[in-house]
Length: 287
Ligand code: AMP
Image 1 (cartoon, protein in one colour):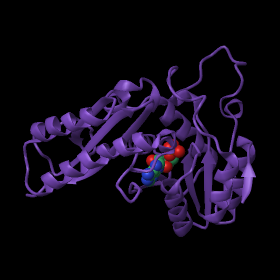
Image 2 (cartoon, protein in one colour):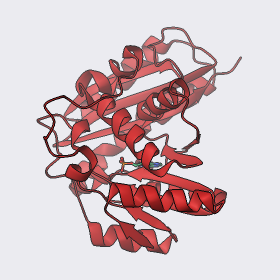
Image 3 (cartoon, rainbow, N blue to C red):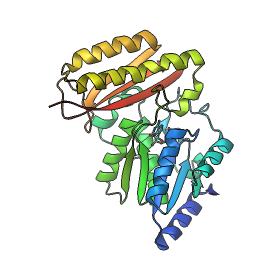
Image 4 (cartoon, rainbow, N blue to C red):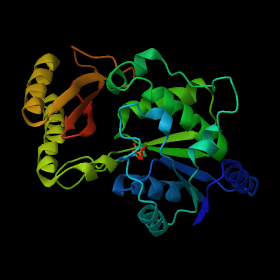
């Protein structure tokens, strides 16, 4: 595995590979890797000649009161795991290298995804988050110019924001959105799970349980979305310390729904202790 910290060095290496006719599969991450991330790397290896992974805890997608400083950065363990899944390139830039020092008096260019996608769900509670995500992903795409880029559906809203950006800005790559990897008991894997105490870890199970229940009831013909949502919220509130949202939305536009549609997603965000957890399930309703 070749580790590259410099953005222009990374860009040149990727360019060399493309010139040799190699296909590049790219997996952007913030590190603190787990099986969810590794599943993306394995898929990238399967479908491309070369797998490139980035680890960058992007400061612009964290709010002032969020966990940027204490976000886990186990660099040694991450690179050990990436070697096991046969990652070819690991790009690990510093924030200065990605954004430059404040030498210009002009603010940087940002990607502004459509309001309908970023002012709802997590965007309501994390203003500026998806602008930060979209901008850094656009920068990473311009460095790697991958043939395929891999994202997890665990971060459903993020996956929709990036899909829309890639389509609208004519980005020349294929996006591969991969299923959420879960622990045996249903908890969606997340770098933030390591913050949870054993007791909080047990309470966190309520999130996947509520979402699975909604999925099963819809599969069995339930059409009353308001009732499903109200019952789910009640249960989330019983176990979580606070609930940011539980919504059933159109799978593409993310608009909140009262009536079922053919393609829907249920999403939730809660706080357990000091840890914010998100999860979602894709819903298929019976005709
Ligand atoms: P992060 O490091 O949290 O920014 O995540 C990097 C990538 O891994 C994103 O595309 C996430 O959606 C994806 N990811 C994180 N957790 C999971 C999971 N449990 N299953 C599948 N993909 C995941």
